[in-house]
Amino acid sequence: MEGAVSMSDVAAFQPEALQLPELSPLALKANPFLAEQLFSQWFSLPDTSRLVKSLLAAAKTGEPLNAVGNSSTTNAGSGSSIPSMFPSGCTPPLSPRSVSGSPRTVKQRVGPSSLGSPLKVISEPVREVIPQFYFKNGRLPPAETRERCLFDIDQHFYGHVDGLQQNEFKSVAKDICKLPSFFSTILFRRIDVNGVGIITRLFMAFFYPLILLLSNCRDQFIDYWVKGNFLTMDLATQVYIILKQPDHEYLTQEDFRPILREILSTHPGLEFLQSTPEFQERYAETVIYRIFHYVNRSGTSRLTLKELKRSNLVAAMLQVDDEEDINKVLRYFSYEHFYVIYCKFWELDTDHDFLIDKENLIRYGNHALTYRIVDRVFSQVARKFRSKIEGKMGYEDFVYFILSEEDKSSEPGIEFWFNCIDLDGNGVLTSNEMQFFYEEQLHRMECMAQEPVLFEDILCQIIDMIGPETDGLVTLRDMKRTKLAGHVFNILFNLNKFIAFESRDPFLIRQERENPTLTEWDRFAHREYIRLSMEDDAEDVSNGSGDVWDESLEAPF
Image (cartoon, rainbow, N blue to C red; front, side, top):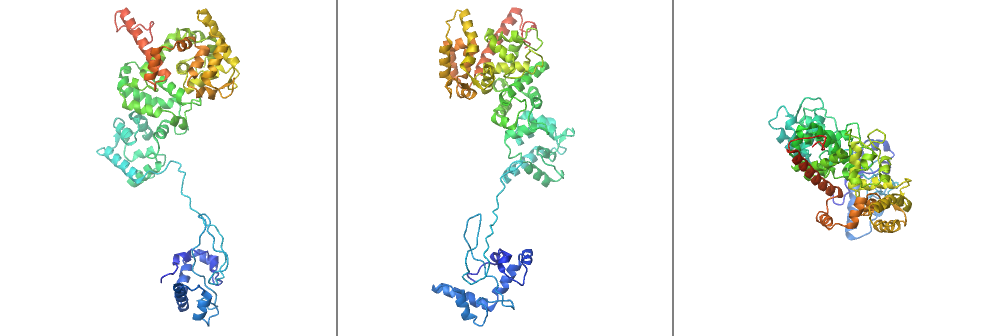
């Protein structure tokens, strides 16, 4: 019948609103279809039919709707204006009417019903269903992405009934998992926990952090693959999960060694090192130290996922996988950069015990540094040494030092030297602290017959360079805001670089403008590598053969 209210609306009534003394509200709650059945029975009564027809007729003619008045003409003998289906003449519930309200709380109209119904006014909020917004392992992948991935798995495992061996697994890591190819070995071992040496398509489910109950069921493998959510994770998170130990929430230096071993054994740019395993180990150590110097900003030797995502390490890994010339990967992995670092350390370590002291370090850069700043470095206020030997700096400590010294404008370099200059450790550099370090610079300029620059003039220059928020006080935040932080440090304790900056070599300025993406460290390492290689060539010529090696004369390369 036109205009009739749907029975599903009736079923949505609160049981108490029906007001049926013959039926318990608990019975209605237990049987939600009971209201629908009652409405059907009431709607089938002849008196109900006449009432509805009269209301429709009144609505068509524009007359006011008065259920009581209209029903009295059609059911005058009834004790109630609304037809009843109960012997006692109790009033049955009216069909529910649409109401308006806020999306969170829906209330019935206040006041008597236009049909004279004695229904109670219900003011109970309706629960709003909030969609899930947090997923512990990430959002589920789209169906298209999932199906495409499963298709690729079938293609890679096709023809390998018994599964894939480790030497066949590289394509799976690179093409399906979208990881650098040198992750294949560690990924294979993460999956092959029992050391069988073979991985089947179903065992690939280890790639996700859930438990596969029935590994021989394809449908459950699909469920496992999707619920693992590696498909929706970013690459940095995938790298983090694969590298870290299962019971850790961070990465250690040891966690990077498997991929460094794989790079050394497979990368074409490092094939020449395969005959010298001792230097392979030094290269791997240097790369790891560089990674933690720039990425582990907390200095805890525990690299977190947040730090990994903020860095460019994953991008550098992808570049290593795509670039045959390892020296073009300037971030972390360049062999030339390693060569410069190691040779610099070898030059200072005169007794070759892999430890250097203050007297060794003071010779760095042709005695460029002052004694006072070297003392501060060995006081370990900027970074605790890992050598465990009092008054000695190990190779790892030297890597951190040289990267900070030759890349002073980088964030770790600024923090390192700021802590050295901050004598009282209050996080603020005062004019007295800067004067303490500049006094030795001034004395050295006088000894070298250089025209001395008074500290008052230098202080004005430094303040102009930094532009501190508070006059006379320089904070770490001030130093990080300026692009001239490295020059400020050189003024205070590196005489050679201070003089070079004041002379402003036009050739160096043009180089900087031509390659603005290169860092101070990149330019330094390039110059030093050329110098060291030329010294090697000259040494070979003086010895009469390029194949003669004298370990006592040069660094072991």
